[in-house]
Length: 126
Image 1 (cartoon, helix red, strand yellow):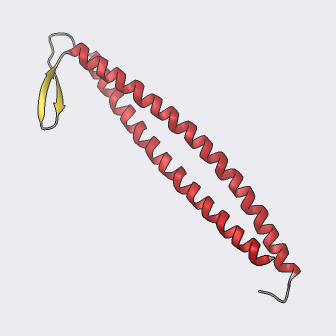
Image 2 (cartoon, one colour; image 1 turned 90 degrees about the vertical axis):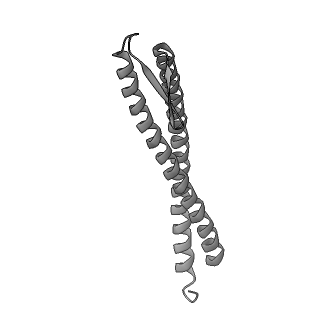
Image 3 (tube, helix red, strand yellow; image 1 turned 180 degrees about the horizontal axis):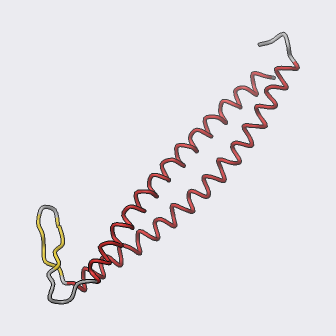
């Protein structure tokens, strides 16, 4: 009895560890997006300070290419929209994973209690 509970407990622990890895990976991805969002907001603010007489350049590989100010503003705006949408997606994913992790913790707790009871009920076996 205790052996089967122990095997099930081990499997559930592995599931929980995988959930923790997924959660950590999602948090890292979200943090990266937050950094990109901040960077792009700074670019947007700088572009707002410019007028049509200013030159704007875009880095394409090792080359700087002249870009129209309006085009640069639109590009940064679209990038901000994309990053914001990705952050929302990551937040939804994080909520889902946190819920799964909480349910997994409850399952582990119940199995640990069952395992302890099974061990206490069979004192000759260890």
